[in-house]
Image 1 (spheres, rainbow over the protein chains, first blue to last red):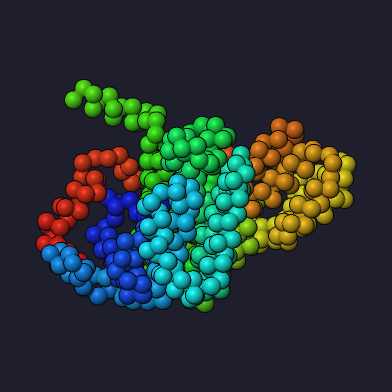
Image 2: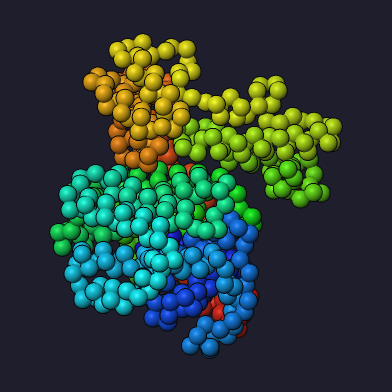
Length: 290
Length: 210
């Protein structure tokens, strides 16, 4: 949906990268199998991360070499076998894509969002039917978000908490999540949700300023430093919860995402708009001379 | 319980390896990291578990180097898991609304944040104690912006109070620094560019490297 939660690929071992791709491909195939070819376009990194978390908690995914549909020229690659974790992530992927499209339509009233919504309607009905509780909880969070947006709440805690609750609901409704892991997983996903909301809001400041859309960072006139402060606390809390998860397999890939991946995404987004860090300035200088 | 599995070491691990793995885990589950955190109890349980595992493995060898802080200075976690918002430093709060604040603290201990919040809402004096307890509630709800503000006000009002100071400092540290040392190369050096790295990989391995 947002794509902020992903590994820092240059730090992955070849085997870890293959594992990540395998999960990603497996998720895509699962969406194709359960919903249809068109729906595979909604595939997101965040849901690959969900599948990875769930399969690490329950004992690791199995892989079989296979082809990716039309891209036969790539040869066979390991693809994660169908599993309850992947199927659940596929459902979540559809639900989130649907609500995102609904959200975009309300925000921008663009034809693209309307088309996406129409195309996803059948898939959404099916996903909601197999996960009625999750669907209701996501809708409640989105409704709360819309209310807060309509009220132009000049607070960052409320809207980000609403989105945190949404992601917490996603992990808590996973059928394969063992009872012993619920507490840690909930706090981890709650904070990841908050973090994603903050990242997205910061990233969209310019766009929202132009269109006049709601953005808490703009309303609060928040400086980069302060935003980084909140992002760091949120990320650290997610990491503390992650540390308390009992994983069945030592998973360096998950570790990469939680430490390097999130941090890298955060640095990129924070420095993206205004190139204010020393590092960026130095790089720009160099570029000018060359 | 398989102590080797708990500590994440192989069954032929040496005493040094076991100790190193154990210390690493103590750092991971350290109670200081989880004060004011909703996962405090879970972290305490994990710590207890690794303490037990470590004791089992060291007793077996009879060279007993003793679990971290066990028996001699009180095992790690046992003091802290029951840990509480009743004041630890002897100086109990004696200002106005002392009874109400004490009740709010005990609700926070039971993780009943709504009840604690209701009590605080009924207190008209917004002093340092009020701000501190509100901050703890916000922190546990994930409302970090307001938690920071509340801890700041509590600390400003009574900078000498160790409880307020610790809360303020630990939240600020969490916001300023990256918690974990990562030596990953975050600069965009040419071979770190994802696309070219993938291309290289595919070239080297003929497209099915795995």
